[in-house]
Length: 122
Ligand code: FES
Image (cartoon, rainbow, N blue to C red; front, side, top):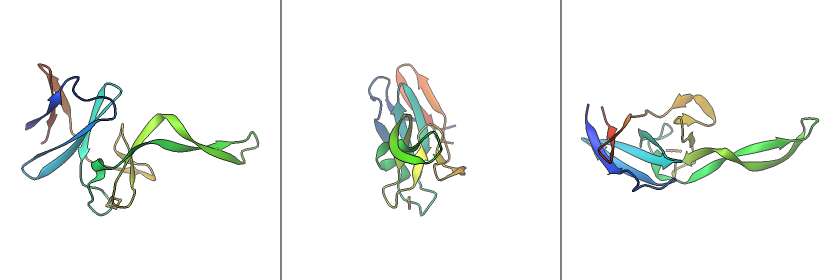
């Protein structure tokens, strides 16, 4: 177990992120609605910095009662981060690829202790 300091608790607002590294392993740590999520910063597509792109709400289809397409809207609950190289979207809360949920980024445990946020890069 290798704990790497990320930030003091309360230092990161919802939507903030930090990129930390240890011995060549780079991890993106996100704060979202008082929770923390940590993932490998290597995109599953072509190795881009997956955790360094935009955060954006999931785009959802809105259907009419007959199930035909009406419009799209941004989700109020689902949030994704988007790899800046070619646009792979990852679910912020699971690390799953939105277009292929069977695939996901490696996640890392968050440890909160004595007013500090650490990530366990193992
Ligand atoms: S390397 Fe991330 S989308 Fe291509």
